[in-house]
Length: 517
Image 1 (spheres, rainbow, N blue to C red):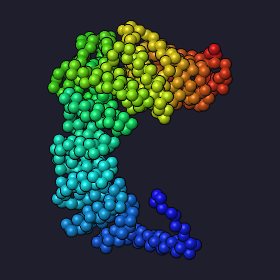
Image 2 (image 1 turned 60 degrees about the vertical axis):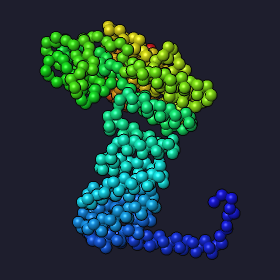
Image 3 (image 1 turned 45 degrees about the vertical axis):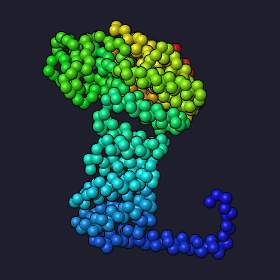
Image 4 (image 1 turned 30 degrees about the vertical axis):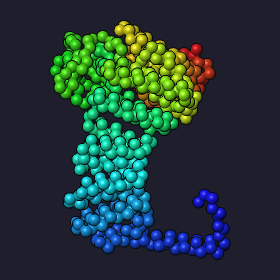
């Protein structure tokens, strides 16, 4: 304890304490061995239940013993008294450790599988009791989600409860998170809900700008805004029509067009259909009510593909928050959570000079928050690629030039599906997954020069790739065998410092034309 003199123990006192500790340890070992022996003898009776109670009260996290109790309860077909005793035991264990995953799980299992008439309303009250004691006990919050669903507690009541918990402590990550789960489960995506939640979270965030919980919830709300358009492009390669989407197609949406055959999925954002006689009409995306959400014709590239669907009223609210953040940052220029939210709002609303301001503030974030600099590098990469796509989406463009963009990650590679010459040189792709290049199915010439690559792990099978530039990288290992998957690859360009790489490549495939430049 603070401000108290430490009482020194004598050797005799220490020896006595050690003997007492050893005595307790031996008793613990004997008890746990007794329980395990009972289990090996398949003893499934009340005495077997009693034998492990003391152990669990002292240590509620022995999973094996909870599992043994489950076996006993299933064999016993227990009375109401035994079930109540088991519930009482879990409650006592939770008093020892309120964050015991094993105890919470066993309680849930007991009510689900053994108790013929579980009182879920009572469980909800128990959750409230424990959350009043520790409002950030995420095990209890998780259990509360299950219980609220079982007793069909109205979502409005649970939202009210989360509000009470947030008002008592704005820094309650679990309450904010549960609130987001409730809105998602209820499908409450109406504009009035977004506006009221944005107002709520603004008050919380500005009360304590250094606390990140409210800022995280605000960023979640902003992230819920969807792009105004789904289709990016429709194009034909030989007898296959490809549909490129800006976001994942919701499960209840359908693609209509090009006959009755079903569209196949390359992945969640790329769909295709093979046809013998292609007669392209308009392709449409429809929702579950058969309302047209988006449409496009062959080789018609959609404009403003990254603009979000924001109403005039919501735009006013978000602009107000942007102004408030600007004022806050004038007072507290090193508030990293406010600055990050400011960047995200800038990019969402896209006012004049938004792109330059985003990059300037991301640079500042890297200096203020060095522990998350890789996140900011990747965010910057995403913004740069999206800005390039938005300003260079010429219908007939074969070349993609992202040389020296400072990229650290691949984004929207599926939008380069039809491009032939792609230059990604002079970027830092050392920590990126090369499998993202799988979308470049029409690429013939690819430059990865000076991308700080140490290997070619997960390099995809690009069947049209003919030339690959690997100069100024540190590739020295056998991962080059990945290149044998590219059936049309003829030329690999390396530099005169990559002699070891030249030998590896020749050993893999002697037909490779190795150019040293």
